Image (cartoon, rainbow, N blue to C red; front, side, top):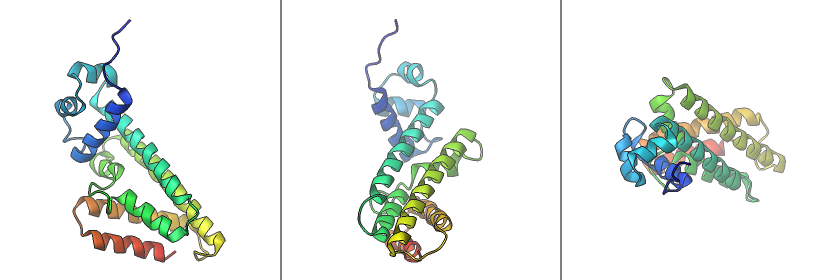
Length: 188
């Protein structure tokens, strides 16, 4: 029987997610992961097989966490517009942090050369768009939002979130980014 690791794998994946979010995939060396996670290099490879496998686990964890938070934020009893604005700002990294969206950052860095990353990104983006569409439909049913194609509106909000996330990562003015989000939501 093999030795049990002296660390919690889920905690290590969460911590790795933070490292990859700060540094990007290429900027995160195995040595940095070992230092940041407080584990040995052998444990890193014995537990996670490769940096890439740890990275995909981190992306999956990030996606699940983001979707839970988004669903909770959009599912509340408050009016649709404030919920959508808050969700978009949180997803794009406006206000709470300036790192942008980990998935958007990763797509920009790796999607052209890594089909796993492209697939994970498309999966997350589809689920975000679905959550936006559901919130828009509820807003339309309540009369708060104008009638129209909720799928097209949700796609527009997703595109805005992605663009604002890239701009947030680039250090754009937070007030300006907030106005972009406000404009997108007000057009619903």
